Structure formats: structure tokens, C-alpha cells
Length: 393
Image 1: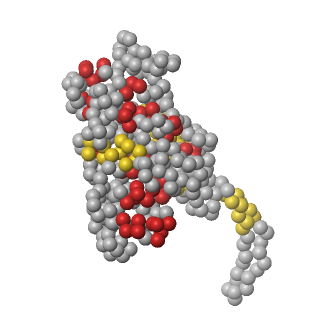
Image 2 (image 1 turned 135 degrees about the vertical axis):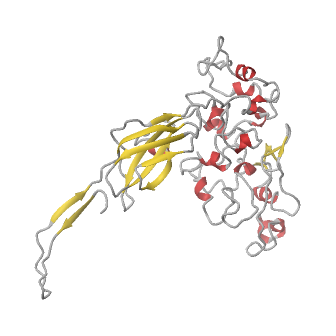
Image 3 (image 1 turned 60 degrees about the vertical axis):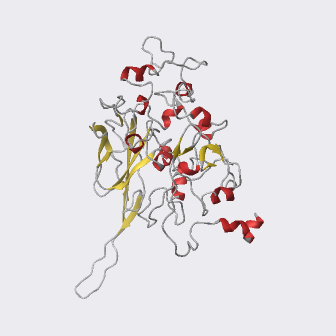
């Protein structure tokens, strides 16, 4: 039976000879499943940063678990992240968390027809703050321990001041000239302007960068950069594998944290587009048979550089404002969309991983090892320039 449906029931009698009586008077019943109750979110395992969510509900239902950075209500539920879909258990462990973050949770029930209940009620606890492990942020882990950051004392004082902090949050030593608080990224630009870091982010942060316009300022830090980065530590391959980006999530997962809903940017669900049959394999390289493929979101886009495109779907496919030069992602792409594609789809060379003050290519782009149709003649598509379609633009 489906939730919120009215069913009419009757009974007929049948004798040994097979004769069937008339139907009894109708009886009606309205099916109303209870919403999940007594939800309790708590820290299960500090070492692995695991949060366990438990709740009570009638048997025979499935459940959706949501997560957001503020208390989840019916009004903002559409912006929350669905972290578990139609599970049968009345418990779930969230392992995709990060130190220093506060997460809010909610649970809904789903019937066999896919109808979803209201949010859970009688909540015991709906949020958990993940504390930092004792070792996190220490000089043996943080990329901030490079030149000029030889001890943990040196690390802290470059951003924080105990006695003369200008920012009201986190004892930041540098505050905004507007209101005495950190409402911009000038604290990060203290070093990331080429004077104290290999990564000159200020140089790449072009005027009109879409993320600078759209990013909100987190309440806990007041610095836009912390939407994507952890200054103390980032427990992913980009830190432990030798990279210095300190992003909260790995590769495309960082981008798809926001670009996974139709309302995210220009009404496009970017995550859905990469689930289609024809796509760049940003999420994997072998599971779909494309052995050797390697391309990431940042191969075509630089979040510090990319500008906002047109507002409506269908108008922006030829818009190159979002694109960067694949051979130096510090620079915006200045040519046509066709030439952008052919800059990699050629027989000459592909972008190779580079990190200097003048040039940055985050990953070496590799093509899958396939030669059969429809991939005839491989991945070199420069012949398009001389084709009838290419000549017509």
C-alpha cells in the first residue's frame, strides 16, 4: 500500500461449488505512515570522523538521510545534500566528514511507491561538530609548514594573534577595513599574493570571477576560501600525496558538492550531465572501460578565474567565459569553443601537470586507449577545421 492513499475493501464468499456471493459493504482505510522520530545524531568515531544517525519508525519503510550546513527545514530541504537514499536500516553512518565542520541531519520515510514523508519529529539531536584530532594542523602535516613555517608556533601566528586580533572570529590578526571583521579573503592574500607562497592566488583571482560573486561568507570563519579549503588540514590525497591545495573534498567531489542540483548554477545539474552516455570521464577511468583516461573539472575550469556565463540554459554552450587555457589554468580562454576542444583533441600534445609561479596545470590529461568506432582515427579531431561543419562555424 502507498502512503497517503485511501483504499476501499470488500469481501465475497465462495462455496464448494464455486458460487460467489454478492460483495459485502465497502470499508475504507487511509494509509498514513508515521514520519521518522527520535532522530539522534552523534559522533561515533573521532579517529575516522564518523557520525552515526539513529531514528525510530514503523517497519516496511525506506529512508532518505539529508545533510546540510544549517538546520534543515521544509523551506531549505531542497538545498540539503542527500547522503543516503531509500535505505532500509534505521541507522546510518556518515563517514564523509571533515574536522572542524558542523553538520545538520534530517531523515524522511519513503514508501514502496516512492512517496516521501515529512521531516522527522521529536528530535534528540540533529547536529554534530567534528573536532580536530590532536595531530591535525600540526607542522608535520600541514602544507603551511613550508618555507618560513618551521615550527607550530610560526604556523599559528601568521594568521592568528592572541592579544591584538583585529577580526572578531578565530582571533584573526587581520580584519576587514569595513567592519573590523573578515568579510573577504585578504587574510589569505597576505601570503597567497606571490610574496609568501608558490601559489599566487591573488594573481589568478580575476575580476568578475563567478565564485567570488556567488560564494557566501561562512559564519564560523568569515573567509570565503574556507568554503572549499581547510587551512589547517585536509585529510585527502591532495595533502598526503604531495599536493598543496588542501581542498575539503577530492577532485570532482569538491565541485559536485555544489554543482549537483538544477538550481546550482544557470539551472544546470552538472553532476547529472556527467552520468550521461557520452561524457568526459571525470568520475572514473577504468570502471566504464576507458582505460587510461584522465581529465578533471579543473582541466577546463579554474574556480578562481572562471566567470559567470549566460543566465539561461541553451544560450551558454558557446560561451567561453567559464573556460581557462588547459595549458596554463592561470589564464582565461580567449579563443572559440571549437578551438578550446581542439587544443587537447589533437595529435600534437596534451596538457601535462605543472606547478610554478607562472604556469599551473593540475593534472596531465590522458585519453582512453580505444581505437574502434565511433572513435575512428583516435582522439585527434583537428580535421574538423577543414570539414563543411567546421568551415560554416
